[in-house]
Length: 87
Image (cartoon, rainbow, N blue to C red; front, top):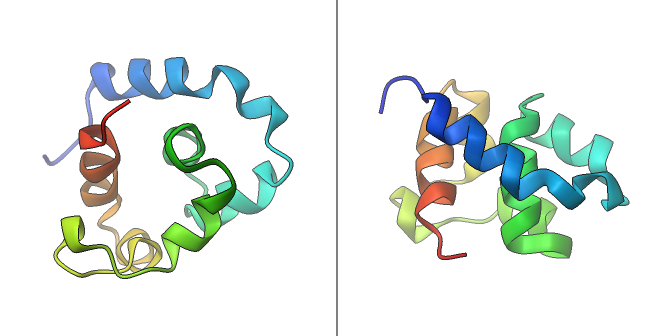
């Protein structure tokens, strides 16, 4: 996927309804390269493990580290992975 469409951003909005309650919201957004949409979905799925997940090797990402992919301009790969996680 080259560019996320409105469906992703709608999904991120729905996932982020309780994001304001995240006690590490600012750190998470920064760790997601400033992409609040990624941070919202990540928090929805992983809660307190969100920051740790960003630093792990993730098999669903071809054994890549999500934070590195984001930093390398491949945030859409991380979005795809998060979007494919079961709710």
